[in-house]
Length: 223
Image (cartoon, rainbow, N blue to C red; front, side):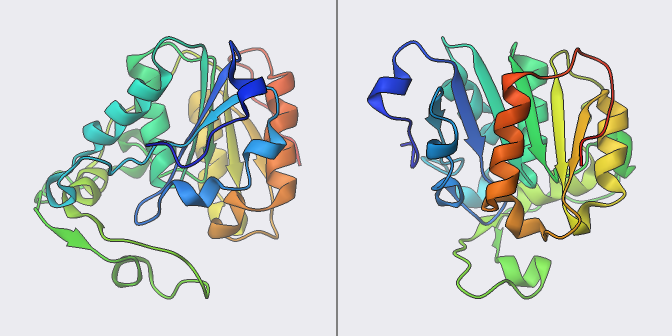
């Protein structure tokens, strides 16, 4: 069930904006987004819904996005792990555009670890990522999906316009991702990784880009 939806007025026949949360988080991280995208049918699927999280794979998360995009021209915007999910979805289904907020890196940029074992089970956010900002809402995440990302998931190219958004912790990865996919780049050097899904400047920047994305596959930089 989607945690975030557009208004009834905006949903009828409108282009769909699908918001994809990161690892250990959920659709609630996008609660502020619908008001910034009044012309879109905004959806934020719960990637874990209906799954045994201890066995969940990245492909399961991609399936959730593809279901949300079915039957409607769609833009997919993913944060962190959700950014890699968005890129994977773009390989499997035609999308209008993809926006990634400091995404997990694909194999082509991470190099991967071919010997990484795939484990069943779950992990918590602080054990994997360190101390979190006060009040951060988290939940257990799939070890198998984490191991798949560490082993490396190949996304060599996408065939739609891409916007990469990077904060303070995203350099130089943001530029690497943008160059690899021929994407446009928005950099916010004063924002941490977790700020990117709540900062009004990011929402305004994404909304502005969606109104007039650059011709694919030109690469540029907006700061």
